[in-house]
Length: 348
Image (cartoon, rainbow, N blue to C red; front, side, top):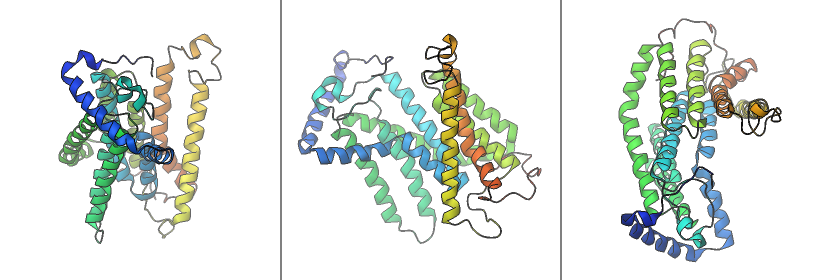
């Protein structure tokens, strides 16, 4: 477990003891079907339930399909992941294998409730299903059935592996539902206000939001940093060199070959950036780790981590799109210095 983890024992929360005992019995019943093949399959499925899967998928949506949808999904998932981490640390609740070690078919280093997998699957696949259903000719029933089935399957994998109680899943779905309700009701108005407010106000707004996130939950600055770089990169890109994922290149829509080269070059650049910054900035992996103030115990470690993830977010929304334009993988705007976005980068 992470060294900062200090679990609140269930025994000290008498009203939860019975709930946890009930949850353990449910997990025991589910684990009666346990076998190595099924466990391997379940672990593969459950790996699709974190931001480590959703964020790269959102990057592909941003570069391939719709940069505006990519921005919205990216913002939603990063905020959802941060809220989940914040609530876990606030509640400090155990996982099933903390109370009954024999149930642990997998290990997790964080607190239990609310379930991040349950929350993230809900906050990603519900907007995705709604988006897919907007297009005419789509089988809405099949789309929604698939989305709901995946959300429930993700919850089942967490019970099977003994890493969550049923109540953890419920808490994750409730929290995810609240986030989605606020998102669907407030997004359009919020985007309209920010679009009218202008380029600078947009960047100041996201900077204030990130500052608030870091103040409330300073244990992990990677998600706020990613959000800052991603959003500022997007507003800069829209203001200076508009990129359209589906924009025509020399009068033709980009084909699969163009899209493949975008992914290859974009993710290669992302990997190089990540590795280079890890080697340069303070931390245990730095080339200058032998220097006392630059090693694993460096007082500048968190600052370096914040810079690294900010630049990664900036690369996704601005650096890579600009590179695509120079490589002929995306349309180059006729007048990059146009004033049409002087009132604000378009978010709608």
